[in-house]
Length: 234
Image 1: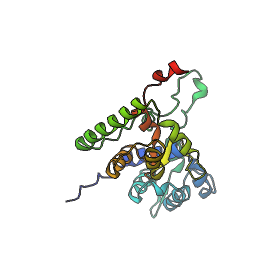
Image 2 (image 1 turned 120 degrees about the vertical axis):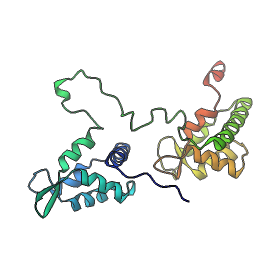
Image 3 (image 1 turned 90 degrees about the vertical axis):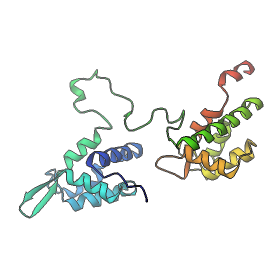
């Protein structure tokens, strides 16, 4: 039987929305305020759905998740009409970018980025758990690649850096496509791995929101020799 999906809640949906908004630097206000002609801080629930579609949020969140968020801020206005208090919604979302009332406490320490939304070590290692069996195979594979790099005295990251600067690259920092990832290993670095091993590495280091991209910085950090080994030659 297929595994049951977790029930959608406002909290889980809002967490995913904040993550999408922060990563993509989306200002949702621009897509909602025009529906509020009288600037009352309220719009129709259907306007919220349209605004999220215009912002591209519906590409990341399911209709059920958007409905859960919209319902949380929806209140009855008349016996036959409901409105969404979108200004409160925006205030809750925009809190990921800054803290309110900072002018009253200008010396307060503000984190550079919300740690609950972004993995601060995402360019040092992959936190994705593939399960005991795959993780064991992965550990053996990365150890083998690291051993090859150590014996040859090479670092893999510069080869990926070149690929990432290609005119046909996505230009997302620290990421290359699946094809570029495999070509760098097999052609540029001349490390032979099987298709299944390549698929395992890609599964481990795939970007969370863009599955067609691979986080080569985290992978390189795992297999490249320590930089100190090269300092004697500088």
